[in-house]
Length: 638
Image 1: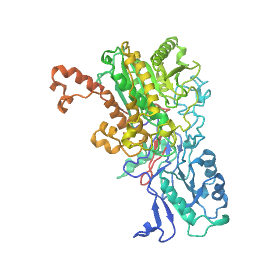
Image 2: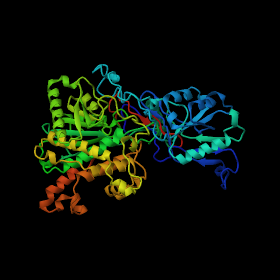
Image 3: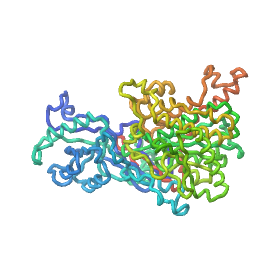
Image 4: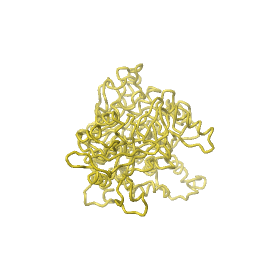
């Protein structure tokens, strides 16, 4: 469990998330088959549900009734078509097949007000992505869980100075009493529309005659009200039932972290051992469960950090640097900073080898793929800099970054007014615990450049990753895009800055991120996970996690997620070194010839270390981490 103040998640691990999404044609013989069911139902397979999520105080999301919800299909291609569903149609309830471009808060509020006439909603993907943007997140992401509050930096609390995500309409944080599904396959959407045209569409606006084409949506979830209620019900089940049913589970996964130089994992670093932290996030989300491409909101930044780790590892004198570097990839940051909150908690409780006192500086990559011109903005916290010592350290950090960027003409590092607050970032969770010198690097000076933040449209196209049509998948894998070149340059700046922050003086200009590494990572995470490079990185039994499409970056109830696995092994691959040793020698350095022992120790130290979020105690009493609760027989909730 990854509990943070009482939140739970439904457990779809051993049961399908939705029983059936199908459309039902009440016309015998429409579909050939040997059974009545096959003649009546046609399953729609490529779908994604809106799920029920719980936190400590309330619920959001969607769910169906216990047996599912069935309604007559009505296609809404323009807002005027909604009149039939809301008032005029004589055969409610209706299942609305909604064009993706119309899926807005304004329209959804109209549907929400007439639930007696609405059985559910099926949303088709908008192609191309909505030109005006679409973000179902809120305008102030993770509000209340960072450093700013009414008692600390009140002028910055609740994003009073900057609404970082101005396109956020908060749709993903609303509660709907009917099921909502995303239709991911264009061909399946066409079949449903054809059924509607054949049976439900009458000329001159008159009521169609029976039989009618209908759709059944099933995504029932047990969880209701709040995490507290859900956990109590789970406790009763486990106490009094012979075969207890899982009611809800917490969102849980793993942070991934690695040290540039090996450390003794059996104890703590000495207080004088200083560490430079390079951080970013792994996860994103959208309105629909496990559809979170997160190209700009997550992927571009963690790919850039992976490339920076590889570049820094190749510096000849990394083993002798005065200070260590810790690369951290936080999971669950979308939901109230789960990953960074857990790491801070363990540092404070002495359950992590690095303590807060060991952190000398903190460099975080925010959204970095949509730079205007060459600009990369350096965000700092004005409140901690009221301490003169911290202000001097932040000034030194900014100067180091500027020096590192001076040799990369395609990246122009820019400072911001010291009175401007930090954007939503993991650094805020660390600053809540201790004043440290930190900076967040981002492509935006104020509001996000990302018009599809935490939405289904934050895809490869959003960050301008595209390939010539005539190329094969293998050629695409190795085709260096302009985006890959730009992110490699950011990775070069980061790696050079980390080298200097760690005390390096000799090889700054020689540190160079590999654009080929970046392009392979982008292709694997955003286009096709099942490619030759990812297959070579993962061990054989994990290769089944690689699908023919992009990986999704929604933190799950079953962990690790596919993204966590791939990042873990990619980091080990990019920062490790190939040696000619047997398995026994690798696992037992005493069997290695003496001249190679130091190298083996170093190799083991560079190996990836996974930091678990799976805990049974709360991070703090006020944390508001989300859970998902299942239905019968298997679904999810918030």
